[in-house]
Every structure is written in C-alpha cells, then in structure tokens.
Amino acid sequence: MGDARIAPDVAAKGSIVLPMIKLMRQNRARALEVLPPDLHHYLDERVIVTHWYPGADHHRLTQAMGELVSGNWEMLGRGLALAELTGAYRHVLKPREPVRTLRALPGLWKLNHNTGELDVQWNPPMATVVVSGWGLALQEHVSIMRAYMLQLLELCEAVKPSVRVTRHEPPPNSLVIVESEFGEPEASK
Image 1 (cartoon, rainbow, N blue to C red):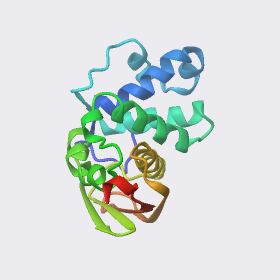
Image 2: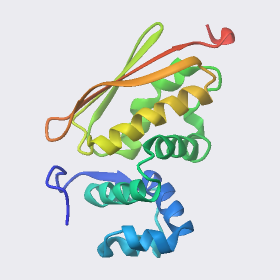
Image 3: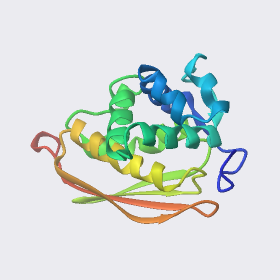
C-alpha cells in the first residue's frame, strides 16, 4: 500500500494536495482508473488547505497524477507554483525581486511540509536551494520542485533563469540541492 521509503509521520499540507485533486476531479473517469481504490475518497471529500495529509497518500496521489499527465513533472511543478504563488501564497511572490522571493522559501516550505529544512544561498548569479531531511525527497517530487523553482523565477521576471538539480539523495537521509542561475531585473538591483 504505502512506500517503505516514506516514514509514517511524514505529512503534506492540503495546499499542495488540492491542486492535484482538482485536476483529478476534472478527469474523474481516468483518475478512478489510475488511483488506488483506497485513495478514491479524495475525489469526493473536501480537501482543506490548512490540514495535514499523510505523506504516503501525497506520494501516491503524485504518482497517479504522473500517470494522468504521462509523466510531465514539469507541468505539475509549474502548475503547483502558479496555484500557490498566484493564490493562497501570493504574498510570497515579490514581482521583479527573484532573490527576495527565493529568500521567502524557507517559510513557505514549513507551511507545506512537516519534514525537511530548506536553506537558500545567494552568490550572484547563482541561487542554491538546499533541502535536507525531506521525507518526500523521491524522484517525482524533486522533479516537481525543479519545475516549481523555474516557474517561480519566471513569475518574478528573473532574466534567463535556468534551474537544475545537482544532488539528490532520497530518504531516509535525504538531501536535495537545486541550483538556479538567473539575472535580476534591472529595477531590483
């Protein structure tokens, strides 16, 4: 049922579960085919953005979403960034200030994840995001994270952003390093 790599105490906030569920509800027939039966209830129950949901459920929902979008993790990461940064967490997005927005990520991380520590280091033109101890640092989630970061930088009007994962070690001793190279918009220097 669950993934042995995910500890039972790992949880994800409803704010990152809800965008997936909304897409699944729009494609209900297909979602019922790819979702394990014990997760079908997510299609009918209200997902509360402030509630914590089991990490194992979040991972399995993510895998099902991957099947729905043919493994397009880029689309899922960008979609999550758009949903969060133009919705409930729009206060985090600082237009034309990509470095300031990135520096707000540790706080946003703690709102959405009950495991892991996120740190941002800025050494122009490179921002390095380091996440250690993340209970969901599995390949799908890391791919989504990379795309999320790229969408965030584009929303901030960063100049020619590129984002790459330079290190990925899965749980239990997880470590993820994501490097973003970009220029700052002229007005924010």
